[in-house]
Picture (cartoon, rainbow, N blue to C red):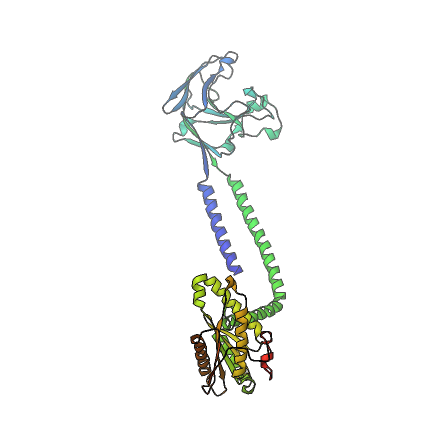
Length: 461
């Protein structure tokens, strides 16, 4: 079971790893588009602010993008025109470091045989930049010839380099000289190096910055971390399970003994439930039959004669109909408790069905059993019952001998009980084997209701 679960988890983890790597490779892409519809500010710059500068640049907007027309004149030592897209003013730029590459759809014309364009990404960093001083922002530079890439030019941001002239003007430590895109303020397109005077144009149809939502290196490190955590978790769980298994193995003998004992107790409990009436706790018919068989197997001379006593609650249907079944159940439970408290432990007491009960007195002749039944009848009639009821019972008594079928004895006791019903209820009727009929309407001398447990079994009873 443990190995099967481990295999399933391993297969699931491998599948998820493959899916995640494919998603990172071919999906999970974030794109920033810059075109004529972008909200960024666009302006054209030229060299007229510098000594001798006479170049004039103007911004143009067309349906296909934004552009710059430049009339470049000699005069300034490094004459230029520049189209600038502003993301924000330092120190507030945007983070382009999460993008891997830039794709450019740019056209450029001019008098040179090879018309090149310089692409600038300016970055603000408090370590070397000053608020409001654009020249202090680092210049990440790329120079290329747009005419060679009419389909667009895609370049990794790692190909950008910091302009050497900017480094010369802003000396700094080596760790700060590397390209930086974490707080880009402007993207600019400028006329190229060794530019010739004359009309120049730069048209920008579209710029796309593309990158992964999670960089590939970071994503792979994350996958490695997940695998390491999974292996660590497996080792921890496996260690815990092994320790638990060892503890269980060490205590297995004791556990099995306890389990066997519990099963034996459970079996006895289920057997007891199958033999008893759930409402009263008295034996049911099966339980009574089992007990009688057990008594007979112990030896007939110790059991016979037996007295069978049928008990039926008088007018029980009237109690149920007038006061409800809950009250009827209380009466049945109360009767069972009263009978059990009045007879000996060796006597068998069973609920025969509904409001009928059967008592079996071992080694007791019929007349003596009838006397016990009479005292029990008086105790029931004088007891306190729910709802201030007066509850009485009709008793049928029969003597059962060893050579007689049990069903015959029960039949005679049942007939005696019905005769008690017919003769007015709340009475004891006895039917002996030789069909001598009689009735006991009052307790016999020599005892009281409190002596039912043992006194009626004595020879004097």
